[in-house]
Length: 156
Ligand SMILES: CC(C)(COP(=O)(O)OP(=O)(O)OC[C@H]1O[C@@H](n2cnc3c(N)ncnc32)[C@H](O)[C@@H]1OP(=O)(O)O)[C@@H](O)C(=O)NCCC(=O)NCCS
Image 1 (cartoon, rainbow, N blue to C red):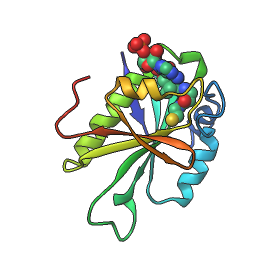
Image 2: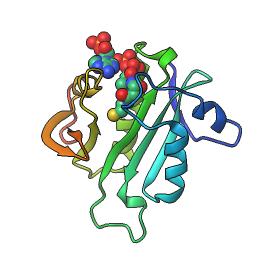
Image 3: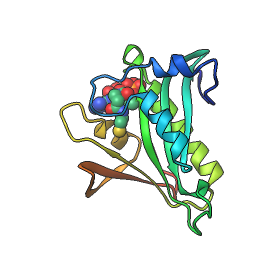
């Protein structure tokens, strides 16, 4: 499966903004995320590609990008989506594995990688759990918090 994470450019930004998450209500539109990234120094984002086609979007909150940077970096998954046309093909899992590997490489000392999701009938919680994330029981901004331990490496 030829999945990659690529920087978004002037040539690709419209295609990434046209990607649609279904059902609605579980993630912000990509155009909103990219606009927010302009104002949040901790935002790190990439388009997800299958071959040469943009099929998804990921945005992290990486506190080490703030100035001054905190002594202890915290990194979490802020936005993650695969276009409705491409759901259920294994792309989401492959892309999130790439994201996790990249976070490990850039932050070797990091103990955990967190995310959160809106509860509901199409909640992606089982998707995250299948990758080793565990629900903490915490609710932040009406979203369930899940954490992946990065040390030792998870088995899935
Ligand atoms: C959640 C999402 C990113 C998953 O991407 P995907 O490419 O469809 O997922 P995959 O095909 O890689 O699926 C991997 C596994 O997770 C399961 N899964 C995927 N989405 C799921 C969901 N919403 N609920 C339950 N299980 C789900 C799949 O059934 C599959 O399980 P299997 O291997 O046992 O068959 C994608 O469906 C999406 O963009 N959803 C809408 C937006 C969203 O919820 N984003 C997350 C915001 S926190």
